[in-house]
Length: 255
Image (cartoon, rainbow, N blue to C red; front, side, top):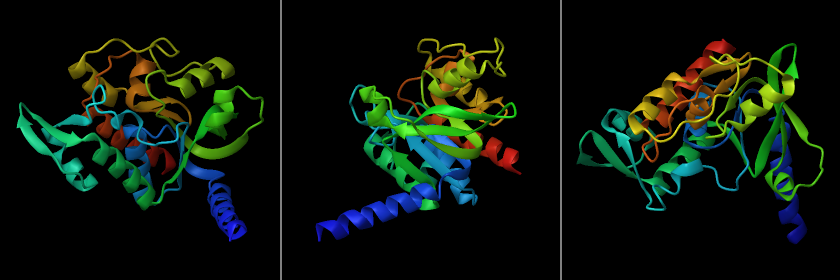
């Protein structure tokens, strides 16, 4: 029985991985913007793989604010919350309140149920670079990188790559440094995140969601990190809208 259990798990995983070695979009980081983007792309019929270094996809949503597992979203996002299928309450002042655990679980479910492949515990440690274009990602187990072991990776080809890695925009920073490329930013490089200013951060995370190099897009806090904008804390409307915008831009690129 034990052998049968192990075989079924291996068969399923390797079938999923093999089928994801060439995709329309590789999303790096399974936070809110990355998952929303993956959900939108998958339900548009695109082949999407999501790579999340941590064991649990969902990013910072799970913890709410300082481990108080509630988050807020602007009232304008109520149609999005209803599409996502989460409950909300209206405390007033233009905000609605949602349970962070329910929201994180719903984001993961919607992306996977739409057809996106989520590989948790798998990190994108580098990008593939071909003909002056980002052409995919280089992947390894997150635990391997955390342990500092020298283990060669695998590669995934992708027509488009989304950096949704969060505050430090790790993938974009590494691509710029290693390939010596000039990003489509005012300085030509990663500008670095500014401190907290919720209103500005919310607006600018959507504004900054864009292509930064052929084949490479940024969303969520990675977008604010690349373009030198403010953080916004536990209000998530901008993150959700950033994911939707990233999906639209990638769909345009894919044609």
